[in-house]
Length: 374
Image 1 (cartoon, rainbow, N blue to C red):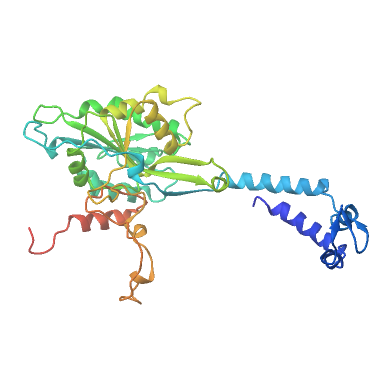
Image 2: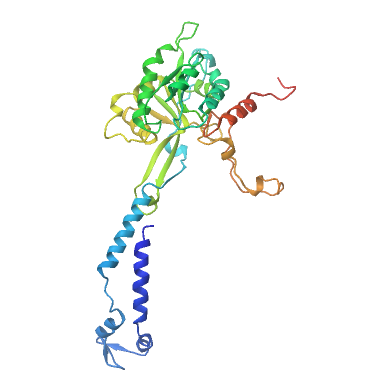
């Protein structure tokens, strides 16, 4: 795109140059011996040869076409972005794991999970999504809160679910809206994580959309090893690049994918909701603002992996993570395929981009047991 306009102008000027070019000149040059800037055989000054061969001068129209092509390419290159996976080992060394012991006296039941679901305002069949979440993983969260933009939808679930109606044009991809969600949760929910035993629970908050599926049991097992005294943000760290980053040393950004959900310790949640994370210096997009705010508030970002180095947070559904190749098709069951399978660790915590039918299917597959095995 950058050179389309310039290419057209160069093609036109090249055809004009070739039409006026004397093709006898290369043969004359081969037969010449040069001395003091003069062709001895034909006594033709080199200055005249230059004029004969390169008599064309760049015109203002060509420069204008070149500038127009660069401008169009720049306008297209900046918005056009794509994501690629980031090596977690080059981003962070990993969390500070705590070995469970009797002195620590912490069990899985002590991990208090709050599930915050932000329903996308333009999502079709919102009722189906909410019912699927309610019937699957939300029942295993200690507390679940739904944010939605429809008063009618809120009234429909008012008796059985805790909901908040937010009338705004912004979505969870806008940092201003997302930060207000974090502030609401830190103000209204952080003081409700007391267990019946009377001791303080270890609180963690999961924030995602209606297409997220959460393995609550795997999350509790992972958090049991993490030092909850740290301000930690667990998220899928990736990078986004514009087309211009292939030509120039800019246009590459580190982001935390909101589609894979984000998980906050209580101290991290309070820090990320602070007013210091607002203003002109903070990016508008949530995924970039999470990195900026975490750096400002000294919140550590961790991209969870298992003991084999496989990621535990996924922004895609299992079907998208399994490669579609000839080696995985029914037509060639014996053909080997040199494809790296990304899906999935037994300790996977979240999937993203799932419809309500896939919610129920994954819930059934993860909770069903083989006959005869306790």
